[in-house]
Structures are given as structure tokens and as C-alpha cells.
Length: 246
Image (cartoon, rainbow, N blue to C red; front, side, top):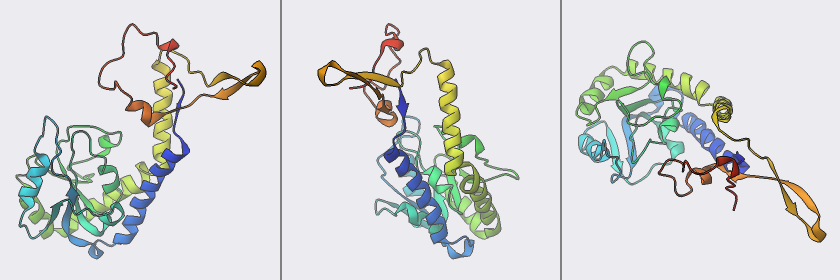
């Protein structure tokens, strides 16, 4: 099987990074130019087995607070998120895709810590110390109000965290170049442990029995979600003879 990222998929990915960068500019690099509240929008009825009521708990904990701009629904465009000083991250059924974009803002990101899932950049997250780059709160949000009041009273600390986050993620590890480098390295290491050699070309029959070579391709994202996708590989299947093309 030969998997590659099509131009359309890759284009959308880079477009999202561009939107995050544009949003940061729209919000202004200056901390004082941003809305002095904590923003969250999303669907409440999402949760995993470890934290089934995470989002409901957030809405309840933020209800009626002076610092809160937390709402279920009434969505805010990704490009506009960077206009707020504080951005709240939540997971759902699985890892929360929004975090990579929130960390691209020059804003302080609030994360229920520890997270249940993992993404490739999570090892760079620092919850305390001289390299702190986000604001941690308890998974049940019980200290959210206390934490927000503390940082609102010490805006300098929140501004420093935001600046440190933007420098690490927006300017370095979540740039298109850095992410492409990571993907290339990941694919190379994956190739070293797989038990078959990918075939990049296949023969197709043309008119009058003539044969021609054509490149094989299979959309990576489509393959990842192709059923069945919730079980281990069949040990009786010889992977070298599997052709995933339709």
C-alpha cells in the first residue's frame, strides 16, 4: 500500500495554520488589545469514558462569572479566537483538535490537566516552572474561577505565558515546516518496522492488450477511518498481499 497526502488535504491543513496565524494578527500581538475574558464555544454533549461530563462541567463552572465568555453553540470562527486573552481547551470523545490552533494564538490557553489523550506536540506542554506555556486547571473545573481571578489580578504572568506559548508553538513547532518535518520522520520510522515493501506502481491494461504503469495512491485519512478501524489487524492476513485500492 502506498499512502500519500493529496494536495487538497494538505492544502486545507496549511490553510488552517494560515488562519491561526491570521487570527493572531487580527487579535493583535499586544495583550492589551484582546478581550479580557476566557472564551470557549462548542457542543456540550461530547465526552469520553474517563471524563463523560467535562464540557457540561465547564459551562456550569463558568456560568455567571465576570470573566466568562463560555457558551454552548453560538460558534466563533477559528480566525477570531485570538482576539481573547484566555482560551479554554476541552477534549471530547477523543483528543481535542482545537488545541493546536489555540496554541498558535498569543493568548493564555487554559487546559484541564492532565489530558486523557495525546498528540505529537503534547510533550512540549509545560504546566509550571520557568517554561510554563499554558494555565492548568483541575479536570472537574472546580478551581477554574479561582484560577481565573488569580491571573486577572496578575495579568503580567498571564501575558508572559501567552508570549511563551506563541514563541514555542506559533513561531517554531507548529509551523508548516516543522510539522512537515515531523510527518516525514514519522513515516520514515514507520517504514522501518512494517513487514512489507510498498509498491509505488501498478500495471494497467490499455487498449489492444498494451500494459502501462500508473502510480498507486490511497488517501491517508480515508484509509485511517476505513472500516473496520476499531480492532487489531487479522494475524492470518499476509500484509504483503493486501491491496487496499478499490
